[in-house]
Image 1 (cartoon, rainbow, N blue to C red):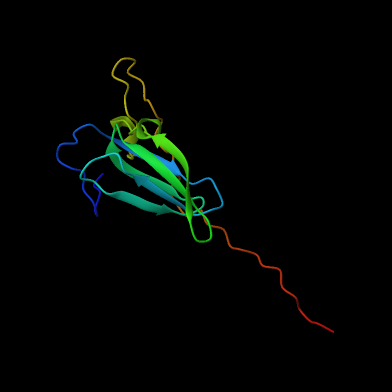
Image 2 (tube, rainbow, N blue to C red; image 1 turned 90 degrees about the vertical axis):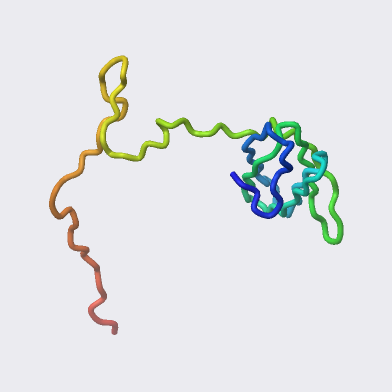
Length: 131
């Protein structure tokens, strides 16, 4: 995943894919300041999910916004925010059955679809007259 605005410095080879969720009702600012030559700061709205790539040693600071200020409310190591990347078999979107090479059985059964029209007319109740 590329950081479009501020790419990671080239000397940072050990990167991880991370996710932070603002579970509060306040606006937060997520900032990583312990990586030299890299600026990472994002506004995270209530309920928003922030997915980003960062060095494994990065520390995320969470600043919670008040009326005219922000308070450092948490420091989280990015290795605690790592999300597991999907395996190649999880990315298969074909409706064909995938065969297990050991047991020779389908891992996921194929999707059964009926041929023909499956729609039915919609019956709507209506008001005939108002007195």
